[in-house]
Amino acid sequence: MKTIKACIVLSCLMISFKAIACDICGSYMGITPYDNKSSISFLHRYRVFNGYRNYQQQSQFFPKSAYRTMHGGEEDSMQVINRNYSKKDFESFKIFELRLKYFVLKRLELNAFLPLINNKSKSNDEYNHYTGFGDISFNAGFHAITPKSDKKIRHKLIVGAGIKLPTGNFYAHDNNSDRLPFEMQPGTGSTDGFAYFNYVCMTKKLGASISLNYKANGKNRYQEKLSNSHNDFLSVFYRLQYKDFSFYPSVQANYEFTEGLKVKNKLIENSQVNALLVGPGLDIYYKSFSLNTSWQFTAFEEVRDGYLKSAGRISVGLNYSFAKKEKA
Image 1 (spheres, helix red, strand yellow):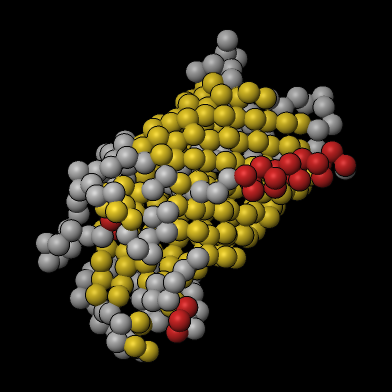
Image 2 (tube, helix red, strand yellow; image 1 turned 90 degrees about the vertical axis):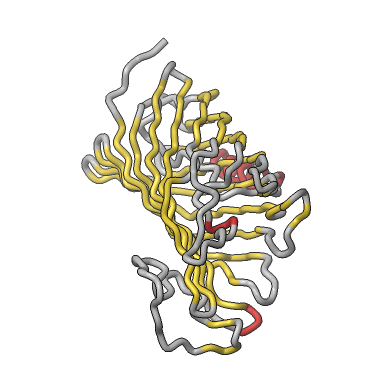
């Protein structure tokens, strides 16, 4: 038990050394009892912002129209507290992502992420929404430490790096032929690089995992650049077994930070992201299949008056792992 506490304390110390985050690094591998297996996964992630702090408005996970198809021109009887600050304003960001992982060597994996993006916003009865393929990412992960089944305490360490390519549309327009805001675009138009560090410490039942990500962003042709960012993730979990099913309930924390958007090297005011999200998670494993879920609420965020608050994030993933093959 002392060793487990030491692992958790070590994870907390490591997470405090990092200061910056990005929501799209996508390199956290989760709790994986099936080590060194190639796999195919489908991930859905939903993030929503609504409610103005200076008007004491409560954030909601599913504001009206944030999670259904919109056909434009929709009218509703909105209660407007101020002409510019409706309690029904929102921004929602949804990702539907195909993930492929292949072990080229026993300790070396290659990953590809192919996202479909659906972004929506509503402000003063005006909608913006766009659906399209986002930027494709590739990365390679090296399993520096692999878990040993004969040990009471098992450790796993993956270090890796990757690249995000500007394959998504970053010049989408609204019905008035005006270019949508940067955050509503499915792509960024820039080539970005990222590095990550994933560590898991586990006994037969109890464990902790941590993921540290750093992302260096480039510029697009409009001279827009999202500042370099960090995304740091901590999870403490417990293993339950029932026949062929393995259940991993967890408590999770996710810290993210970026200075914000720069245009022609000038930082756009109030575009900074500085937030801590916490909440429960549940991973379920059955033979070659796994279901991964998390529901995170915003515990802290730096947001100024007149800007929407973060309600939180929901993630759901379905994974299939292929039969393990020994490699050199």
